[in-house]
Image (cartoon, rainbow, N blue to C red; front, side):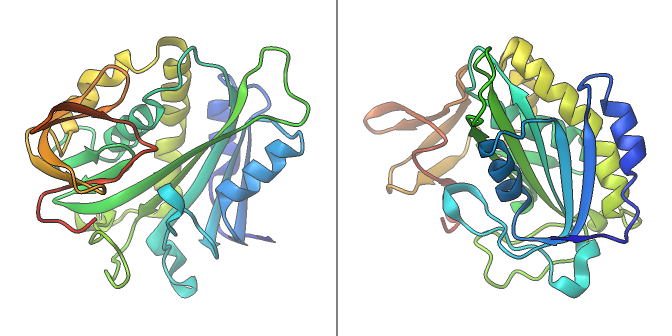
Length: 270
């Protein structure tokens, strides 16, 4: 892990978030294996302070179901924004957290919806059937666990800022500069972090309910024929109140949780 020379607005972001998360810090590094892996290591060692860790390049980025997150090549760091947010959290129910995070990110990137930034259950942000953002959520029980039994939450986010090649990717990429040509990773980070923290704290207080209609408005699967990774096919009927994907199959309505299977619109590769 090496220090970055880029300007990431660390002080400004920290000052904006600290009133919500006392002691909040922002760290920026040039290269790391994975920002999520680093914060998970810290949590397991008892370091549970609220922190944002941003990296210019990851050598072992991770996505859902153990899939690698392919960041831009080392010489093209500006084409990706890679960061993880870590904080202790104790919601009554964790179900649907990835959906709430997705809503926050999509709304920050496309507030009006004019650019058709949508949400693909459970944790991707899509534009025109192409993946713009990946989200990975993990939790750890710290070694010096707190009395309130909260877990340490780590939210990893990868955003394609500049043009990306599709080689080796399961889903073709979209990138932010397709409609926001002046976008830069530091500026996007500054725009995203405070609303993201506010959304996570709102989820802790109220669960998925405050986000359900907002997710539905951007749901790219609802009303479409989908195929699951276990070869089940059916009509997507949106998301249940517990965050499960609802798929109407020949055998009836099936509720899919995010740790079970992957899902794609019919005709797209899993």
